[in-house]
Amino acid sequence: MSFERSHEILSGARDEGPSETAIVTVDLDAVAANYRRLRDLAASAECAAVVKADAYGLGMIEVASALWNAGCKTFFVATLDEARGLRTLLPPATIYVLAGLMPGTAELYRADGLRPVLNSADEIREWASFCATSGERLSCAVHIDSGMNRLGLSAEEVDQVATAVDLWPALTLSLVMSHLACSDEPDHPKSDAQRKIFDRLRALLPAAPASLANSAGILLGPDFVYDLVRPGLALYGGHPRRHGENPFQPVVQLKGRILQVRNAAPGETVGYGATRTLREATRVAVVTVGYADGFFRALSVADGEEGFAGYLGPHAAPIVGRVSMDLITLDVSLVPESFARRGAWVELIGPNVPAHALAAHAGTIDYEVLTNLGRRAFRRYIGA
Ligand SMILES: *Cc1c(COP(=O)(O)O)cnc(C)c1O
Image 1 (tube, protein in one colour):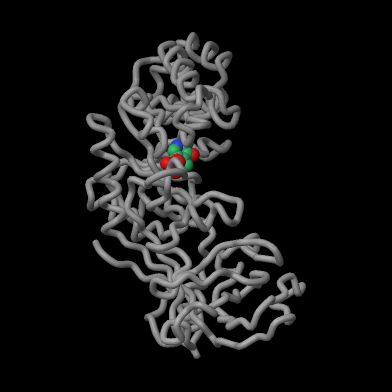
Image 2: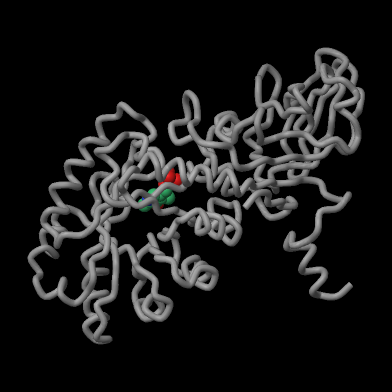
């Protein structure tokens, strides 16, 4: 076998065939529909898209192309390398890099027409002096910290740079932004407090379009929308508020395949650690997905616990025992044999099992589920 062919198979760039053990399906029409929904919710504001971490694990190339075709013109990524990749795909797009300006990287931004999100006074000074030297008023965003203590200028730093009159004429301030800490909790007082801090601090800077809302922030209403919104999760069918009805369409499905169905007797145990002892005669389906596919080991179900269930058609099949690297075991005692048979596909994320429900069982959030889906599964893109 040629190196190219091995590389193709190992990297997942292959045609779907009977050997597939796990399939991740990404519905690009649903991504586009979620984009339009967010754009409508944001009314007059521009709707950008956050496509960091390979579009939350779903595939930057396919997802960003679908968003571009749906009318999205502005993209946010986390790192400069992600931005450079996206630039080759979408030459005319506006691209912001959330991680901002690492020392000495300004020329890389200029060369590819990328915009740093400047997160400190030092970064603003470095960008301004680079612009002055290169004789171009290059675009950038400035990130104000309104209460997360993660990235962004503190109130003191805003005061400092606001009065440094030599900085601003050197550059083009195309966006002033901040980020909400608790937007997924609609009644949390922190969101309003952050909005007020953001308004007070941005008024000190030169006038520029403003941006505060991520996916959940958009759902907080018109006060949070400003001039540009920055959704990520909602585009990918995640549930910004985690509880109640999710207003966005599901995008991702994960399926694993039954390798074998075995009959186990009462008193026997299932899986590593023998953490699950069967009380009754049980039919156990062994399914080809494990923690190496992003199916978290925290989804393991020991004695006395209730956990996650996959679906075979309309029939629930609860996990029994530990999740291992490549396999899980499901109790299919109540599932008709026509569904629970060797070679059948099991829904692990999909219409019956939203990513946020799986996440809740694993003690995490759908963001982490999506970004961990891994490279081993076959990826199928539908729509667009
Ligand atoms: C990741 C990120 C977003 C997108 O957040 P979602 O909750 O996925 O919509 C927006 N803004 C910033 C600064 C981010 O880091």
